[in-house]
Image (cartoon, rainbow, N blue to C red; front, top):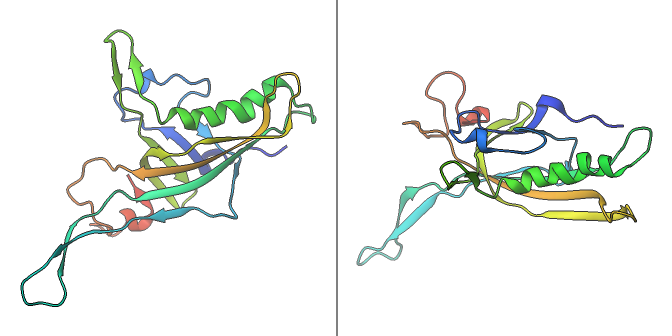
Length: 194
């Protein structure tokens, strides 16, 4: 049986998020992952935003930098039932496939405060991928694809799920949101997008 990657690959609800107590998932506030589609890789991307400034009498427009959109990170999570001693029970399917996939899916929805009768935006998370990166993100895309080969014939629960997630970096407020650090270490060039 494969164990999860521990603290090397986690998705954790941001500890600084003021509505963290409203997050209610059986796994708590941290999802530890066992499988990722490493063959497809992890994609980081951003395209700087430029606007055209077309002067009279010039064949080309000037390109004026306006801003950068949020950096996106795409990763395909795979959840597979392993079971203990090769026994795949309904509990195993829930704990190893259904609940982890639902954890990621829940990151798209608001949380509700019953006492105040108000909903708050979905939570920001800290996505940690080894020493490659730690990023404060929101989930902006991703859907569950249930894998029914095989499946449990009694409960119709799948033995696997894929979740191709797209996160966007939403760093905490800082005056310097540049790529290079202002000191000798850290900053986004080091993979720290917090």
